[in-house]
Structure formats: C-alpha cells, structure tokens
Image (cartoon, rainbow, N blue to C red; front, side, top):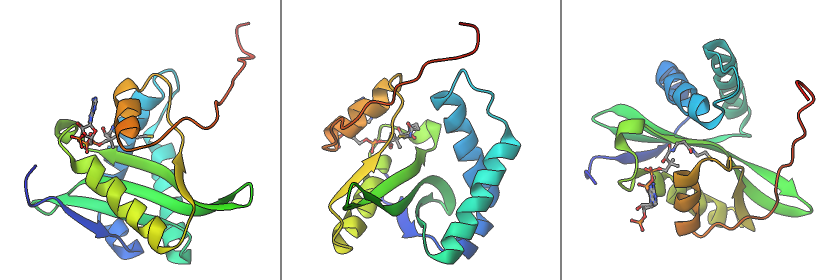
Length: 158
Ligand SMILES: CC(C)(COP(=O)(O)OP(=O)(O)OC[C@H]1O[C@@H](n2cnc3c(N)ncnc32)[C@H](O)[C@@H]1OP(=O)(O)O)[C@@H](O)C(=O)NCCC(=O)NCCS
C-alpha cells in the first residue's frame, strides 16, 4: 500500500472542490451495488448536493482518501439513534475500482471507527447488498456481523 494514501476529514468546501470526483465514485459503485435499478447521474448529483447540506449543518461526517492529490475513496457517515443506542451509520463508502483490495478501504473505515469511539458511540452499522460477496468478506474481516435482513416483495411483474 503506497504511503501517500492520506486520510482526511473533509469539510463542506473540500467536498465541494471534489464534487465531480465524489459523484463519479458514487455513480460507479451504485451501478455495481444496484445492477437491476436505473441509476442515473442526476440522482447521484442530487445525493451529493444533500451531502453538502448535511456537512454544512454538521450532521454528516466525510473522510476522503487522497493519493497524488486525487480523491481515491471516501466514507460518508452520520450519527444516529437505533433502538435507544447511539451509533455511527456508514451511509456511503467507496474506494476507486482500480485500487480496491489493497488496504485503502480499511484505513477509511478505521478513521471512521476511531471517531465513533471518540464520540462514545456504541457501534458502527451499515447496509450491504447480499450479492456484494467481496464487500461482505471485507466487513467480516473488519469485525462486522449481520444484525437484520432487509426483505422485499416485488409488486411489478408478479
Ligand atoms: C468495500 C470497499 C470500500 C473496501 O475497500 P478496499 O480498499 O477494497 O478494502 P481493503 O483493501 O482495505 O480491505 C481490507 C481487508 O479486507 C480484505 N479484502 C479486501 N477485498 C477483499 C476481497 N475481495 N475478499 C476478501 N477479502 C478482501 C483485505 O485483504 C484486507 O484484509 P487484511 O487487512 O486482513 O489484509 C471497496 O472494496 C469498494 O469500494 N467496494 C465497492 C463499493 C462497496 O461495496 N462499498 C460498500 C458499500 S456497503
């Protein structure tokens, strides 16, 4: 893993400076995570616009991983209350496709986990699609366990 992968907590203005790159990373990963859904770029742009609003209001936390000054991964999280327990919820988490599997994601997750501990939160939680086998293995290695299942019954084309 190159030394120059630098993890930084990002402000709204730093996120704004990297807006297009954040959109590109999220667009690529959403197309992979939700292959049967019609993911369009404008909806991703809208999502990142909302991220900027949350950063401004202090309700979102964003860590970026930079290499040669280029954003190569990010983790967006927020504090939430789950059944009376304060947790850090990982909302979006992506490492650039060409750089996956070489320790960068772990560094981003470690930075978020350290902040969760600092804030005295009880846990870090997140959602992960069942077909994302590599990602599930990644979380397993990082100490995560399945807590709930999300069930769905399709109403179209029954
Ligand atoms: C999930 C993701 C952010 C992880 O980042 P990453 O840089 O690929 O992960 P790392 O290289 O830091 O992996 C850390 C550990 O997981 C292991 N790991 C990584 N990819 C793995 C794989 N495909 N199979 C098994 N283990 C894997 C690494 O070996 C490493 O273990 P070690 O610390 O014991 O050596 C990244 O793969 C990604 O962007 N995936 C697509 C989007 C996604 O699924 N996001 C999460 C949505 S919930």
